[in-house]
Every structure is written in structure tokens, then in C-alpha cells.
Amino acid sequence: MMNQVTPTTMLFVPSEGGISHAPTELTYPADLKNGIQLLMASLHAQAY
Image 1: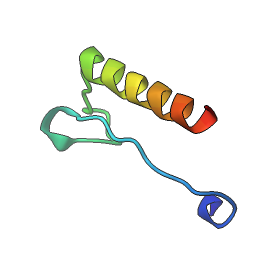
Image 2: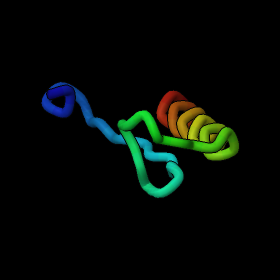
Image 3: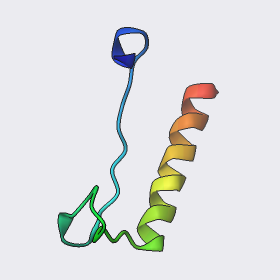
């Protein structure tokens, strides 16, 4: 619904075995850190 108001995107980080949205989902801290760094860089580029 938001894409009708503003451009949107999704950021994905790898999960062990490709499992997501489940109790057995496992995403390693290093992958989460990389995702956060990418998000920060994207927000910075859009702001400046």
C-alpha cells in the first residue's frame, strides 16, 4: 500500500537454509550487521 504514496524497497539478509518467518529462522549476527550497514548507507545517500 505504501508504494502508492512513496517509492518503496525491501532489504533482505540471508537466513540459514533460506528459512524465514518461522521459529527455526536463523540469521547470523554478521549478516544482520551487513544489512544494517547497507540500510544506513542507503538512507544516507537518500538524505544527502
